[in-house]
Length: 181
Image 1 (cartoon, rainbow, N blue to C red):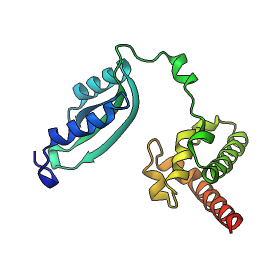
Image 2: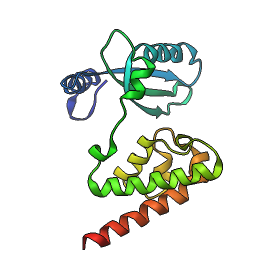
Image 3: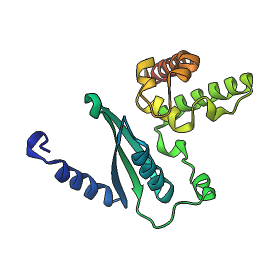
Image 4: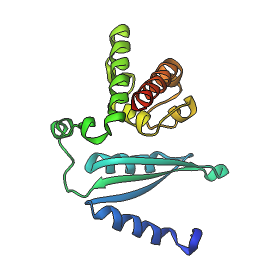
């Protein structure tokens, strides 16, 4: 299959895999057909439960009856999956990952999430998880459409919480910008 610039799919895949291997990551690609997907889904699920998955990207390819989900799984090559306890202890310190300005916005979004969580009597992660909050900040999400595009955020969360978080992100950004001037 030809790509732009004369690259083939396998050649560009090799390039990406080589770049990722420098940080000891690998990629695995899956195609999940829209119709009769059970075998492909089973292969993907088996792979994900037997590998240390770092990230999953997905893209829908519309091609009539041959439509499918293209899925790229970034993973650490290992014979054993991470035990559940190791996954939980490998928490990200967003203060180290985000710039000071972005971390201030992240904290305000996290505080809003905690407030809503308490009011509704649900776990905070059921609203948005920490990764989603950080992506709202990093990507400077400013619309419900952009919010909906984030992994794990569907129409229900967008309609229920989207406006409050978009407004809080926008207000926090303006406060930080005015503090800098």
